[in-house]
Amino acid sequence: MSPQDITITDHVTPLAARDHGGDGPAVLLLHGLGGTLEAWDALAPLLARRHRVVAMDLRGHGLSGDGPWEWDAVLGDLDAVVKHFRLDRPAIVGHSLGGMLAIMWARRHPGCPAIVNLDGLRSAENDPGNYPGMAQDALKTALDQLKATFDTQAAVMGRPVPAEQAPMLPQRALTTCDGHSYLRPGPETLAALRYAPEFRDAIPLLRAVTCPALVVLSDRDPAGMDGGELMAAFRRGVRRDLHDLPGTVHVTELAASHNMVAEQPGDLTDLIIRFLTSSAKK
Image (tube, rainbow, N blue to C red):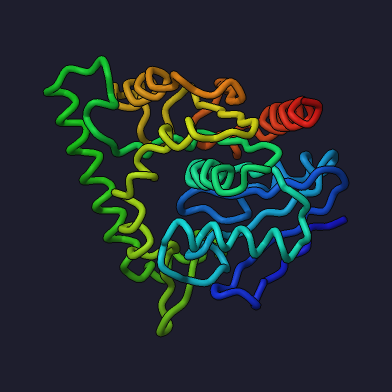
């Protein structure tokens, strides 16, 4: 079937979702911060060959409604999508922020059959101790530069998009107010997430997951942040701290950057299908 878009209106926050159809065990796809359900448009049809697949726009993103970013409320949004589509015990596959939500879902739903976290363990802007192997002076300079970059991005999100630029941006990532276009999510959502402990470090939450979990790490720098020491040190810190994990958690790396869903949809689909299939047999 062709993907079908729907908006769930009988929930406290209207939620936009895309039904990719398919037969087999259900999977709910969750995009990252600043993304939309369109992030899955290459991967979802491949996954739908073996699974029932639905993607959604998180609150404050895409065509979903706005609402305070509170973790319990966002997990309630996921519950609403699962209920609407009658997804029976879905596996949750999330990228970046979506991967963090997958971890939280598994803790909230112990009967979850499996989760897949795609490079969603820590935010890039983090505590100095999470960048091992860098000289302190170089680390401070790099973190100051990263903070300045994110400060600028947050400020931009609160200003109208120049009229000449709006047509060049993903239309699903824009909203209109008083005749002006604005990028989503807005500054309130960004501020709520940026320094939230769960967003900065989801590894402690991962240690409490009891269902089968697959974590896929990137092995290269994201676009715009390549060539320096900071992100290599960041990845070292993540690898360093992936200890004392439950035996049900599996960690692998992919030849891709943080933008792995767009870069390697076929390879990721193969990883996801193999993992979900093997998990179902246990």
